[in-house]
Length: 104
Image (tube, rainbow, N blue to C red; front, side):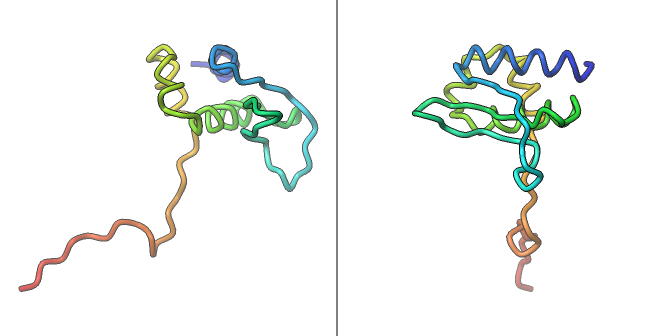
């Protein structure tokens, strides 16, 4: 699926979930944007200078942070898209799962 189509579908999903999406100029220290609450309502702010691919990743990552019950209301294809496009946190080596070693 093309990035512009993915972005459109994610924007539709946000609307369906009652999440406002806005595109604004953000400081470099903020990154490409993310999810926040403003006056009790969820909002995703995305850097308007971000590429379409960066917008998709930012929006999917923000929506993925919502309650699973809210995401359950979306069509399965949208849930898959959010899951596929949201960035995965990387655990530091010390926190990564370690193989189980059996005593001999």
